[in-house]
Length: 325
Ligand SMILES: N[C@@H](CCC(=O)N[C@@H](CS)C(=O)NCC(=O)O)C(=O)O
Picture 1: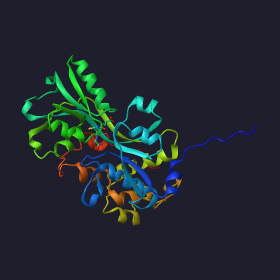
Picture 2: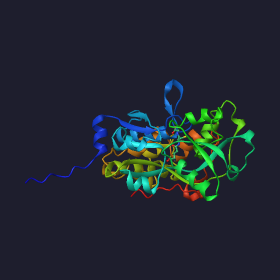
Picture 3: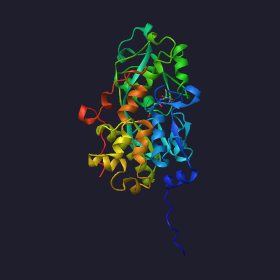
């Protein structure tokens, strides 16, 4: 009886053989994932795809954007239509435990709120008793809103809309009074209206929504690539490495931490099955974590988001990279 060797998934090998990676992103969310000029996808989620493509191939263009709805995103991953799920997806216990996926890294600490027509005169979520609420199926938003209304003994009527971007149209046309979603997504949604001042995002934050990168379960090497690419972008910010100065730092590293990260000392890329310039290439493609945030969704953009929890740990936020050593 011949024993069969266990088969281990190794998406890193598959991606290298294929010559590009498939990146599961949002469908249409300005600042996060949205086709822009010349139909080129842009946004924070897309920058993660570029960073990963650069880390693996030394080339930021070796990826395909696969927009996925909230409902199918996990099956897209487990059925191998995508290699990594970047779309604003919260890390939760039951997803990790039940869905055949693994959490690889946080990329945005978010919360959940409500977007509402100003004319309704509502100023707090606790005044939403009896409201009609547009919700996407398969989201944490759907479950949290149920909890919130139960806790405060209020009633609501859900209007379930499969494709996320269509919820905007539903709000505009009065099919619902309110949209509930991640606060970052609501900020993005609001500025899509021709008359954004007619809408308001309420102050309430009803849930923790740590948006995370997901991979298939038991795919450890690939998971490490995803985790540490995110960590490299975060570490770069802490060490003062930017898209502009990364080349200079790589040539003349003074701080040994910089030398290790950028491949000037040791063989840190090799340990992961990547070129030793992997972090250098990712940073020169998209910049450090702070640059990615500011360019796509920061205060100078139409989204106008402040860093809040997405500040570095030394500034009082939750963004932290473990040591590269
Ligand atoms: N963080 C929530 C995600 C909520 C979500 O996916 N919302 C949809 C429904 S409005 C969305 O933003 N879709 C637009 C897009 O991803 O482009 C979760 O993990 O379930």
